[in-house]
Image (cartoon, rainbow, N blue to C red):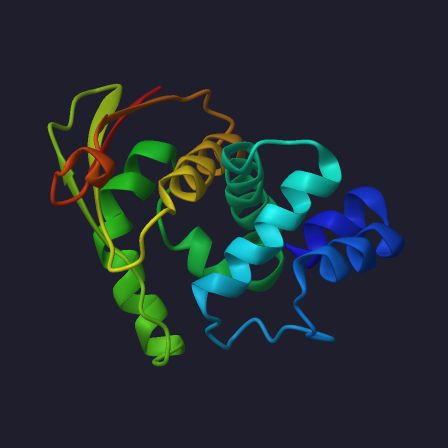
Length: 172
């Protein structure tokens, strides 16, 4: 999130966001896990400082994570995901197994794919962490950007309504 803010709005804006959030961390190490409370405090501070909804902040952060952060820091891992959006999404359940080998301290979500057609899949998102479905939406949008494939994403099931996990219908 720091890179997203500083690249687009400058270091002063990031300092204002950190101050607003009450988070007193000088720098973040990308290979270390952080408590979700830190992420949400920073996202809320971005929301307030930039006059955006929290949902919009999480979506933009998810896009940035794929388009910029993963490309710059984990390019080989991303390239191994597939040659197009459909391949990447189908391979997504295996992707986090590779991530866990590299970063054993992380607790990644689990993804399953169902109802694969020529131009759509249902992406099942399972996580112990709550409140990140907008971030996942942003990740999917970022994958669409990465593969130059316009996507439409419909959240068709959510834990917010008492279900066991989220299901996104991803159409391209």
